[in-house]
Image (cartoon, rainbow, N blue to C red):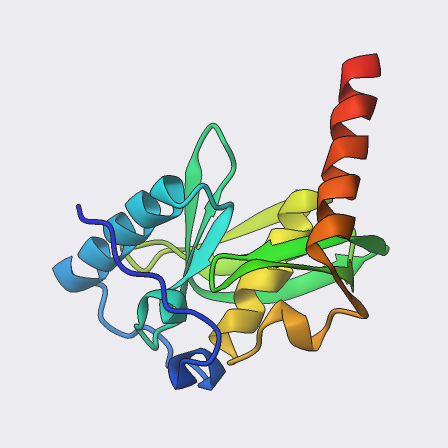
Length: 167
């Protein structure tokens, strides 16, 4: 496994639509393993292949206890609404407020080509939507209804820390 470089906003790769994965081979397995290591090293929650310069429909999501692999993912269902803060490894040091579904059910293939379904709520649902948008050439900044200044972001993080300490 190796850590890959994460490309950032302004790189044209991030605006391109990714092609489906058709070969479930060692090359795909290496990409997935590298993406898993990269997302952990970067302290991220999710990472899409175009963020490491590969125009294929591959995503990894770090759930804490496991990192799930999503190849050729598609959203099957979504419901509810949540409003929250988002950032992105490809948009460093910038944060914005984005509305997303509160529940998402998707289907994807694993590294061997077998289909499965996965459900997520709240942060995981947000992450699924965010990462799948990367596969279609979009960044969260296009969807954000308000970008935060550095001071607003730090104040919001301080409030969250204080609320956690009171629990």
